[in-house]
Image (cartoon, rainbow, N blue to C red; front, side, top):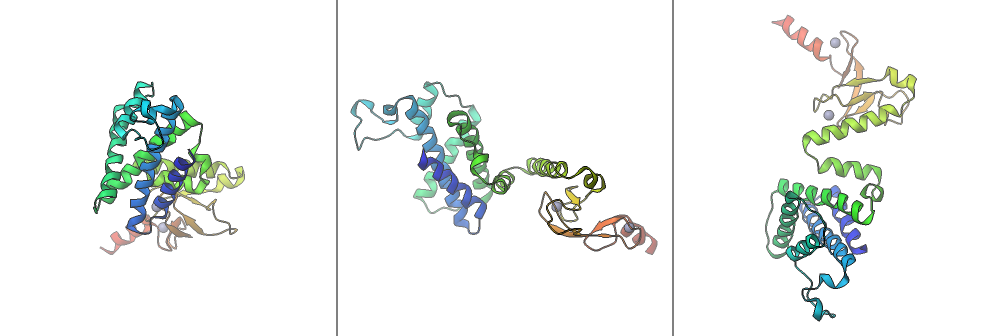
Length: 246
Ligand SMILES: [Zn+2]
Ligand SMILES: [Zn+2]
């Protein structure tokens, strides 16, 4: 179990670090290993001899079951997996084997999505089977960053909006009433709060986007006085002025 948790932590850490291509490679290797170790731990709980290919001959250098047998025995023992999960888990192990035995370059998108599937499975599995909460194991920042990193665009946006709402709710009523939601000039989502609840400086004009993390400065539009980002005229004024010029 400790090894399984170590692999999971290491896999997530590498994924968040993502400074070199090898980080992603080791991340997927660790996550795949964590999946195997947690599944084995679950089977051992059923009976310690069950992880051996031949339980009757169990000894020090006995062979343990391969991944497909591991899944088969868990299913026989009553552990439920849906079809797509089984497919994802097998795919993840195949990737692991290919990375271990061949010098191959995998598409980054493929690896990212497999890491996402593997950890999403583990998050639910270890919560159900071992009462281990991934959320509690990681710092709030790492957990959120990780969730975002493994999510699709639509899911990431939902997460960003939920995080934004949390921060809004934590503001004092008087502050919240005056807060404005602005459209990010980088990603185009309405995911900026002004004044920024995460800013530590008092009365700061600096804001960040909850979705894409872009930082920007809020000013009043020199033409119409509306709040706008990036030290420029607001979009409405840009539009009016450009049409006037024609
Ligand atoms: Zn943005
Ligand atoms: Zn304006």
